[in-house]
Length: 421
Ligand code: CA
Image (tube, rainbow, N blue to C red; front, top):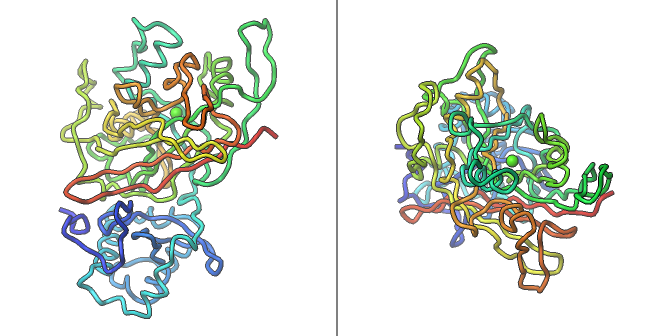
């Protein structure tokens, strides 16, 4: 039992009702303010706890942390200390924030606790490598049905290995950074040759990504049983996609410019430790997987996910509700498969789940599926319709888990689409 996860814990910090950040969460991020350059912090209620201040004033003594470890633009060096050290810091912060602790004195509380409205969140890690999986059966089935054949929607390999591809790390941005509608080659059905123009089928993909805190040597693999030692935590992930560009370019090597123009992540790394109480069994895997992908125990997480679309000058509207628990392939299997050939992973790598669609139409994780490639457009309350995403639309992703009165949330993952440049 991780003591920081105790549902009975209360904090002296006021936690608003339905906050994503109670004392049982304590996710890590990088923030700056008018007065502070980029530093590491922990979210608590509507505040950010400044880890540099805590460290410099002796509140983290005894943990053996290198000096300046939190006074950095990225969390990579902190994550590289390993899962046990990350857990110790989270446990120590939990003790300092408990309602029955007055160890953090009043003057220091005042300075170390920064209101969220005064901070700007930044990318939490310098992302070295980004891999995107394709691990939701419902999503793979829907896409296969639409573009190939409902009778053979899944390709023969799909139930034998977690399909994935290497994505682009440089264009991953933090929530709040707008994305311009990309241009690219598309081939209209009524034309014999392709044209170059702004995408007409801009889409989102609802995903959850894990971030790594360990490294294996090139040539060595990480087993299913070892995988969790390498996973620090999770963020929400929007894998923006241009479907018309994708359809024209993806054979034979897969998506390229239809995906690498931008992806958006939520700013807080919710630790795998904080999600421990929310483990659930995943979907049954038939046929049996090969031995190197076999696992025991509950490796899925019951995290409710929601996608909202906010048209310009309108209120946000929920367009999808899904759940991280629907993943057919779990993160242990993804990492074990990724390194099964000896591929080395690095601290701060990002591994996205693939679009997470549930079994019902309201739980589909992309516009492609929600509107069935534009055949059934969404009717929004403001009277407008959407087959795909319009300029000026903001996509908002949220996620949280609830059990025993404890709600562990991710904050939000927002991105606005601007016109093509
Ligand atoms: Ca994707």
